[in-house]
Length: 443
Length: 71
Image 1 (spheres, chains in turn orange, yellow):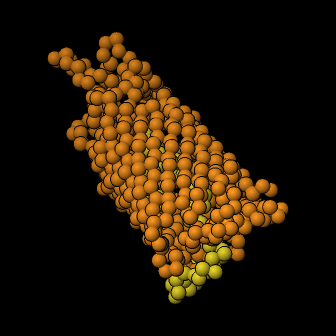
Image 2 (cartoon, helix red, strand yellow):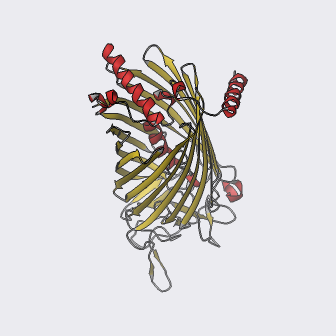
Image 3 (cartoon, chains in turn yellow, cyan):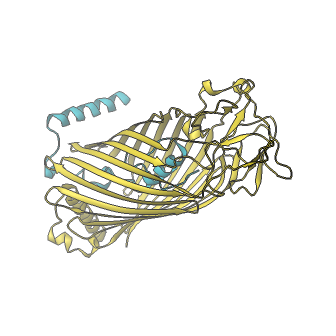
């Protein structure tokens, strides 16, 4: 117990020192325990209803303090994804056939059901390293590198940040930039914008119009973050972030399509597969998105202690030149339970407007330059309710478990519904469960 | 209860504005792990990744996330 108290004392001193931005006193720096890896690890299960996406993920965040506030951090994450995802086509009175992303097979959707592509199986590995250290008096500099890899997506990124303390370290200003360069290599090749799914044989001159061009494409993302942190009192701290993000390059989802429909009835338009081919029986076009996107965001967060209970409230506003405006409100309340446990309810609300080029389906003519039926770009709101329980072990480590429920309701703006599409259940809600087990320890 | 919390927050905020910040010896609560703005870092990283792949907006708390095909 005395040992625990000493550990807690050391941890508190270190935390206080780091908050004050002071070099730890010699006695603390000499503690062998401060020369340890602090590891936060967790297993996460994410499962959607109706056989849709399931994701299992293992993550660890390790940090080591080399003294004088010089911190090295590593993040490792592996996740594996299976299940079905809406492909963007609308439900139809008849069964529908689609070409799989590889272009070598087909999958079917029964009449009346929202088409889901169940051919996704993906494993993603992500690694990040970060270094942070004081730089002159009152300044801290940090820099990081990250990579991640999936079989159809590679990411490499770097970030650099500078913070400065003011006002007896009650105020902190920070400036950070991140740059990412990603490569997208879709299964089956890159679909051409608004090209028809399945090769089309032009009957008149027998010319095959290809639906795909090239193997891969790239996108770059530049993020800039301005942060302001302020201690408001002995029990209250807040922060406000202003963010700017500029993405350019290939921003289209290569696996999403749109149904082409009759401009009056709103019913899918049928096509005849090439002789001997097992292709789609309706006309579907691959989506097309602009090649740039600029987002601006405001994030504000307040943390307040009510005699041991900690309330956290956060709000985010985001707007971009695709016209996706969103509001997010989130709150956690940490309640101490017994000597070493805590209970933490969590609630989150999210709401967004549709992108300017979102379409539920496409009338056969005229075709717009950009169109996507991706539900993630439609009008949407979502709620999350969760509860976390954590407990400190006798050795000073912590284990925790978290269970959350997520419900998303996406809705196509009514002006895009045509004929019989009005009044049908266009996009069913989806529910997901998030289950997480975590262990925080020192090594 | 809600009014009380709002009132308390308003008081704290106003009080804070009068003389923003605390003295170094008044930081015992602020130094606690659960008062750090980056507490729950792993939870928020998981959440950011999930919401990045399911919603139209990302980032804000930190960088925009991504590095993911996320269908």
